[in-house]
Length: 256
Ligand code: PGA
Image (cartoon, rainbow, N blue to C red; front, side, top):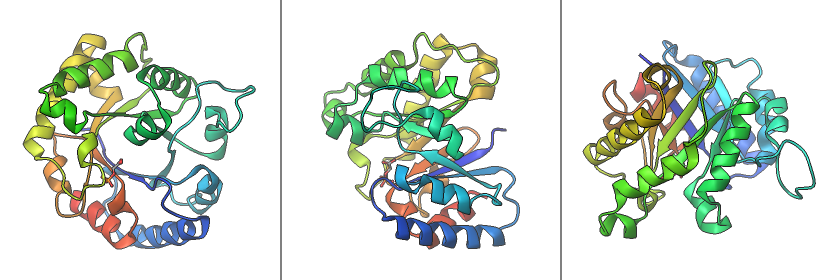
């Protein structure tokens, strides 16, 4: 069985000081938990707090570091952008790409996400690729079409070598930050739609060993168990509920 994964996406919610306090609280509590062998924990602070969190995590092998975005070129005249090379250098293992908030506020397209995924893989990082339909698309009966189309645009033409891994995060856009996750049954149905499209794109051993599919959207300690199981999602991407250490730790414990 694949390791379960819980990823905290702190977005732009914390100052550097607040990030430090939250990270220290989480580390303190994680040290007390036994049997964490089958769970991977990932923290994704803002860019400016990455090196601070990387330092705090130095002796904490159980927690990995992730970035919330990156650019698709390694170097160059791209003012304000962040290279995957530097993310690697700083100690990141994961990079979130294609998040719906970047699509909404910064006009990120599936083609940009495609380029970012290529570059992230080339730099030996693991992309966490966000997919999901909006409420309007769902109401028009288009959710399957939208999901398949996003996977195709983002992943078509990207071959995965034996050592390269990706994570696909299904995040229905309309439940992000709403406090109300979707029905686990509906989410699991979309997981199967994603899997079916992946089967057309990649050999089965690659899907089995190199790709994880996770759920995101108003996950908390009460509902986390409904989304993660051997015949459902491999893990979760958590926004709001990861901003409080007690709630985040409860989620981890509920995954054990
Ligand atoms: P949420 O955010 O848990 O606050 O809904 C999830 C996300 O945006 O990744």
